Image (cartoon, rainbow, N blue to C red):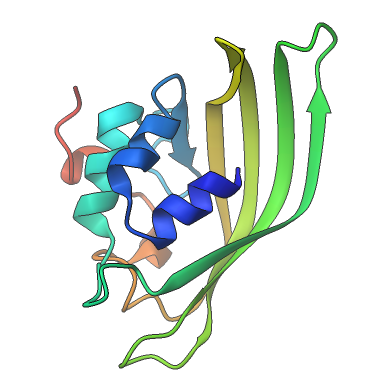
Length: 151
């Protein structure tokens, strides 16, 4: 869960895609929240839509809190809920929260390692995102295929 935040903040999009090599990433901001992305599509979408600044990062900090994890009987799958808040500060934007919401995660144990099976990003509040994304998140109805050709 925390590696996701680190990969996004540091603009490590290939590593971010690897986190979803066994799972799907989707959002309530998507045109169809049931239609998500996996693996290389995640990496390509983030690379196409996130503004990388002169220091090679997004100049963001994705903070997760209120994490609740429930491991299923048998210990092979788990679910988690958490809150997130993203702060950003750039030359053009003073440090401030720019978006917050919730994550609903499903995990599976794959070859002895916990992997994302599904992450649903639920955006609850949107602030000044002009230094973060190349599209207007507040409009919703995001279509991944507008930015990435699916595998």
